Length: 244
Ligand SMILES: [Zn+2]
Image (cartoon, helix red, strand yellow):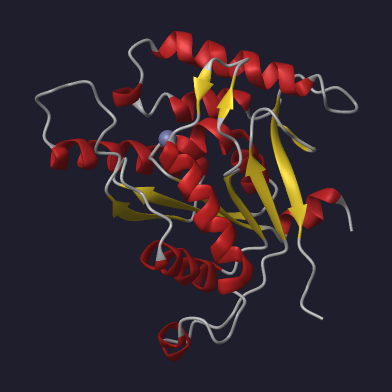
């Protein structure tokens, strides 16, 4: 089977903590897989209600705005559906409630591939930033949902009653800018990625500068691809064993 054929069978569930997370880390890959016939779903865990320095916009208005920005970006890419769970931004906890909601969507969508943050990614000196606590919680809760809960028949019997059968995910792509073993060549979709990130107008005071930074990091990642790619997104890939 050629790589394109394989990607045509790909069903991807990309999980982010906030509207814009998935687009910043993975929209180049998402665009490429959709062009190759794959299906992609987004799951956004929080309402994004802390994502502004504007003291006057209400919690509800900001959430509404960020939903709209995320939906617009997803529509450009051709994402099948965006699930918004609307947990409160900045207060995400890896608990039963969150894990169960992620399991529900994994069992609904039946992804071959799950993308999420690497929960062990705490900071990056090179990029001069500390990874947001919601990102780490989102990563841990998603990994926990993938294994063991989504595939375990005895977990969440009420989901089973609703017809949501256990599901085995084939691979997880962790977003960790410092540690990677897998690259997606996004040279053909970089322009689309820039367009998609630009939908999140509420998030960046200087959008042009931010896009330049992303372009730079994707170019740096491209140097690690063999043969070299102009631009790439990087992941740490875990291939999961099927139950024996
Ligand atoms: Zn975020």
